[in-house]
Amino acid sequence: MIRLPRAVSWTVAILLAVVFVLIGASKLGTPSAMRWGARFARWGYPAGTERVVGVLEIVGGIGLLVPKGRRAAAAMLIAIMIGALLTHLFHAEGSRVIPPLILGALAALITIDSRR
Image (cartoon, rainbow, N blue to C red; front, side, top):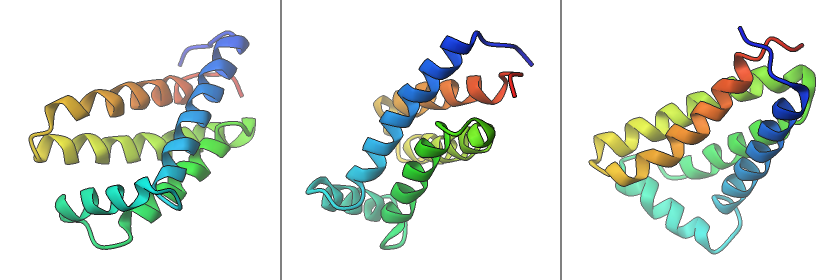
C-alpha cells in the first residue's frame, strides 16, 4: 500500500467522479443513450444492460466522493473497466481499450492508497 498526498487523492477522486457520473448519465436519459443501447446489443449484451452499467457508474462516481466508501466504489469501477476492456478486446476494438485502461488505473490508484 502507498500513501498518496491528500491533494492527489482528492484530485483523482473528483476527476474520476465527474467522468463516471457523466459517462453513466450518458447511458441513461440522454440522446446518446440510444447509441449506447445499440453498442451493447452489438456486443451481445441483453437489452437494458447499458442502463445497469450507467447506474453503477453513477453510484461508483458518487461513492468516490465519500471517504469511507471510496475504496469500495473504486473497486466496483475497476470491475466495470475490466468488463469494458475485455469487451473491446473480444470485439477487436483496439482503439477503445485506452479509456478503460486509464480510468481503471486511476481507480486502482485510489484502492491502493493506504489513507483511511
